[in-house]
Image (cartoon, rainbow, N blue to C red; front, side, top):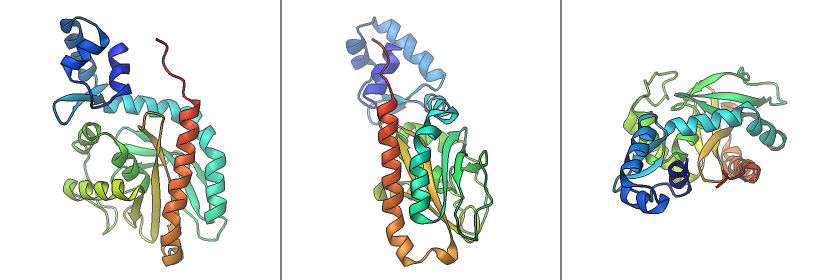
Length: 247
């Protein structure tokens, strides 16, 4: 736990030599612990210099904990406000394996609505919440997931090549929000943002889904900042609810 906590507190800072000095354990012991953590996917080697970051399995386990209770409880009043402000359907999702799963949904009050429901599973590469989550991951964890994705085309707009997805994730990082341009379902466009915990790790994501005919230039201009702002507020409450591991 000491080694894991040290890596989690400063991802990408420590290689084996630095870890040995910081945790004050024998070199052979640290090697054995690191090998075990890496084998279980709890840590991974980042770049450059083979320095360690938290692994995809640990991130997945953490997100399941939030999905079961805390994240939905914290987020619900904020996504309700988001739904009321936008007048559109809002989803809250968490990662589950190579997919995202909706753990909360607030329906648009307007006539044309989404057919999704709580428990619906969606892809990481075609949904706005999935792309927001991937873009917020450390490089090593993201690469591990991308190497396992089996792409499937849902609409003519679906991204089905890893190189194209990596370019989209890079653009998502730069913008601070993600887009689903009718990639999961025709006539539906979505804007998403990742929810980050106190350590800056993604624990889920939110999205606003808009029928194409309502997605005009005004909506396109104002929606990203509203969604990003809501995700940031949820993340701040998540960080405030977290308690550090005991010494």
